[in-house]
Image (cartoon, rainbow, N blue to C red; front, side):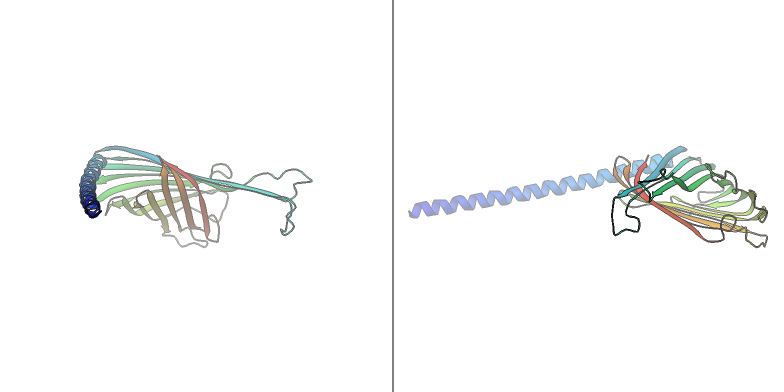
Length: 292
């Protein structure tokens, strides 16, 4: 019996030592693989930076689709016990940028459309139609001749209107020249002190004017898979009018990539333009997103 206990303890000791050696070996292999993976990720990032620095076209698009469907049938606690509501909202943004050592050309376009329907009399009467709640088309083209890596002489054309209803009523066209500053990667600051602002439409209270144009555009990956894009566009009229011709628009977009460009998107915008409304404007849309 004594020999049996001694033999058992001896075997357990050998197994413990072998297990400890195996654990240390596995931990060492894991650390080695992690070091190799870190080095590979750094190499991939370096290659991507070299590719991005090469001259040529950079083309892409992203968008968000938000929708809501609801149906209430004899829901007594509601103000309208029988009701059907639905809404659809879509934003699409595209860009095509060309970069050379001596000049650049940045083009972008965006569409914001939305429809909404509320039918509170589902038993009697005709079905309620969808009503349009959003209709925006925006096009922009910026050309610049570089003095150096950060400063360029530039010209900008920008057009803003609706496309499905009241096309060009109002419509706003900006053409101007000035300077473009790129202080850091993915940030573009446009300062055009000489900009002409055309206002099209039936409202006789608004006319065209000379002024200054300022645009700030910045894109950043906040965390892996989560991208943020912000754009601020302003026009400051040199002509004093009441109502004012000055305006500004600030749009922020967030996209979280879940799988192969498909994810969840959020976009919200603020706008102040008396040519369109005496009050401030805002919108937001959240839903499925896609980017490529």
